[in-house]
Image (cartoon, one colour):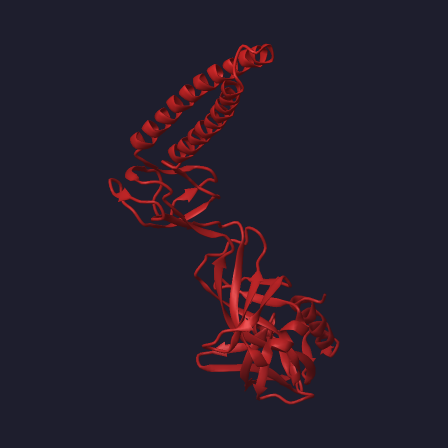
Length: 331
């Protein structure tokens, strides 16, 4: 798939064919891709809020907002006396159930030897069988209670589900919490995406382009063809949400704004290299060649595309301009 930068490179090569010995170039309108630029918001792919799974009082909070947290690190601790006591009780119940079961199984084995000899009645033998089965189930139930108590005790230490940055703290040390209460929020900085809203009339053009160029606030540009286009429109804006996957560890900040551009058909444009443009105060112009003399000519500029810029007015097809305006100034 041809990327945004490759298309710009091919167009620039075509423009360079009309240059005069690298010093001047002949400008002319060419058929260029027309780009639609929309606002996009940078957001993390993975973000979560951890909540309390048991009740108690906050003992310690190991990390604060804006701290970088490794995966699996202990975030905070909750009092565990009640949960520890429940575990001890469950272990005691298990030991008692195990002892009862041992006695019941031994009794059943003795009765199995006595019953064929007629030493015990059928009812006594059936009662021993029922008691042995019941004691086995009691051991299973007691063991399940231990697992539940241990799990509840483990909830008193809250661990980070993934590595990332904390963005919000919902509780303070010493505060009492209950199951389901939010504790800490954060996001993973490894995978980020840009989210934009595309009006329905441009959706077909986006699908045909299949790629988007994201221009970040710091001037960097990232091309991506990993798009997730929602199959339903927003009932308020009637636009479709599009998620643009960014490369791993792209070093972008969530919550920042960006510009997302994609090809929206063709149009005739007059593009000149950025180095051919000179700015003097409020005047923007190029050096047009009149014979051997370079004359500063004012132009009105449009959008920039890569290292070229669109000229809306001030130049016509066939005009010859200096390829490097500042080289002319330096002479």
